[in-house]
Length: 263
Image (cartoon, rainbow, N blue to C red; front, side):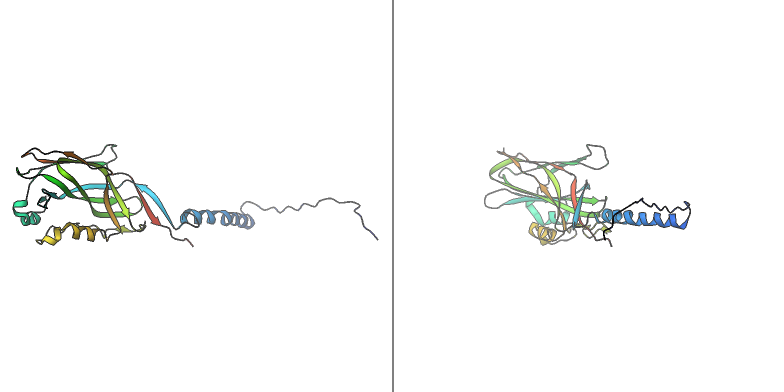
């Protein structure tokens, strides 16, 4: 025998409770636990699948007024040199040439952080000396403060040569940060806050550029000078000082750091 619907109507059941009842509190807690924890986990983890992230910061950079200059004066390898380290200057003997140096750091946007270093160096030469190559090492104090707190001593090496005698070297570049590994954004990193050059050492090996660079490049954090085109001025009049003009900017850097899973 078949059946068919004769009559129907919906049944609506409402459960009501006062705002301050335990049932209302329970419903509120359920809603909070449903939506808030996933949002917090996503925010803290910077995404579910990312292993590292990055942020931008302009570092606090200060020139340390430490310099080491070596100039090749002939095709046979003769050289002159000078530094701000008295022990190194003592080792030079008659190869020492004391230059006139002018340094200025400027804050172009008024944010309290230096944006640029301007350096002029005038190196006296003997009548028979001409410059073919220059190596100039400069040291800096370098700090990050936004997330990764870093306090370190860093350096740049300006190195350029010419096949013919020159009277001036002009460089304009950026002091760039190099990271080998992501930098933890927790804690204070001061392991590199030591002088790049051991100025107290009386030994020549302590001032050898190969030794200095090799040790420096073992660090996770280093700085270098990004300068696409060093510009030489060809020609050198007798008894005329060799000129070095450098403009080094301190740009905003992109810092990478590892992400930690939030459980």
